Amino acid sequence: MQRRSLVIDTDTASDDAVALVLAVREPSVDVRAVTVVAGNVPLDLAVGNAIVTLDLCGGADIELHAGRAQPLTRTLNTAQFVHGTDGMGGAELPAPSRAPTSFDAVEALLRIAADEPGRHDLVTLGPLTNIAAALEVDPDFLTKFGHTYLMAGSPDGVGNVDALGEYNVWADPEAASVAFAAEGAKTMIGWNISRQFAVMLPDEQTRLAAAGRLGRFAIDINGDVEQYCLDTGLAGFDLPDPIAMAVALDDSIIVEATDEWLVVGLDGPTRGCTIPDRRFGRPDPNIRVLWSVDETAFKARLFTACSD
Image (tube, rainbow, N blue to C red; front, side, top):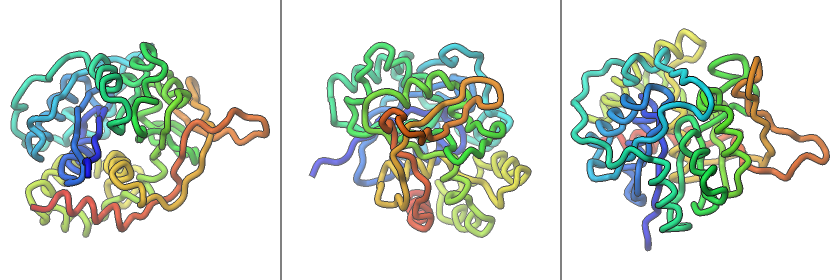
């Protein structure tokens, strides 16, 4: 039986790193390539964080391509106020072992999609700048993947940057608009899922830290995130990108989902919002939106991936 293959686009900070661990450590999956985009941290830090993570979890031979350093039309606003200046909570980590395979992630994405259509699923963990740039070249780009899983948005209208905006969409809403509207099978795993089903409570953090080297890594790099989450009302740190990756690895953990046409807010108080348009006569749905997942199954997968 052929193993599944993933292409992962990431703005690697602390939760992205844990998502990479889940993917690389999954026995039924091969990671075909990792592409990097600016977002949580500037591009050079995101690239270094991705390489360090791959080194630590057994992915040192996976090709890695550096992509866009700025949103399509805007100035980059990072999330270093959440993840720390280095994106990894100031944890003591080794230096990256190598340089990127290339400095053109968009070209790499287009090549992989064209050369091996239908072979791979795509998982996006950051702003959708690289994806939108690829769609500008090839409007059928996403149709060349089996499925695209996006950690993006907050369809219940609760934001994490402002009242309505989820960071990955807020950081480059024009790119999100392009990606959501594109042809191709897509699933959005929003911040609504993370804050309800992927919060690591203190006792779970203790267990994860004791699970092994990668469990300790997951805890150490999320120290700044935990403080931010506690300050903003959660009972522990949440893991948006890992729960999105868990859905990509096994979508049987989905409990409730609907097909929606999503409207993306571009400016003002609606910047970064992703609200379903359910009016009569609206366009046909363009994305599957998740409302509930199996929290127990997600956390079991996380502990397994991080155990020695």
